[in-house]
Length: 219
Image (cartoon, rainbow, N blue to C red; front, top):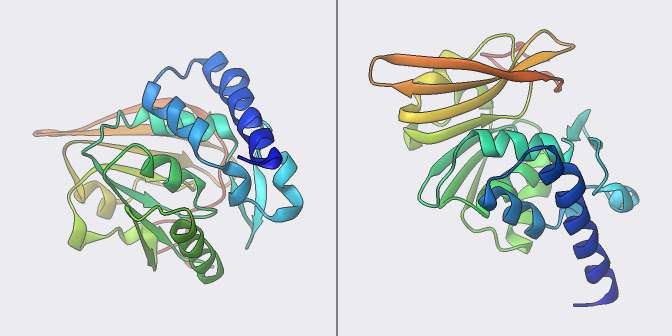
């Protein structure tokens, strides 16, 4: 491990301790994943030194990489185990998918911005995240042929919970999605039971708009 890698490892450890554990995240799998994934590689080079700070950063295409705590909170809310298959809507920087990829057996992630799709696929291959499968399309329609999923995570704010995604959630499956207007949302967790869906709010949040057929429509 060279000097730069040692420095980034120290910053990761400090991030987890000060921003994540200190704010109530206790899932050991989530904490281990966030100590492992090199977050600085998922931002543009000019912002690498800010990668472990407690705020979101722009990644181009009017998209952002979420602040570390939000990534941890959403991941913990999914109650993941090693055998799970997870669908992510909105690959973005790829960081959330990489965190998931450290925990579960398979991640299916969809991105509608072609430049982000190409960049993140290349990065996943570079970092040997071969359990992450990528797709370039409208994520709001899900990935029906690979369903049902044990968990679904949506990393953009939607006006409603897309029915297409609810249908692709397996019984016992969990979904986390920001739902609200274009300025602020409730972070919702949905659990599918044999007889319907259980919904709860995990608190307020703010994400970029979920664009697509079952989101805010086409840009």
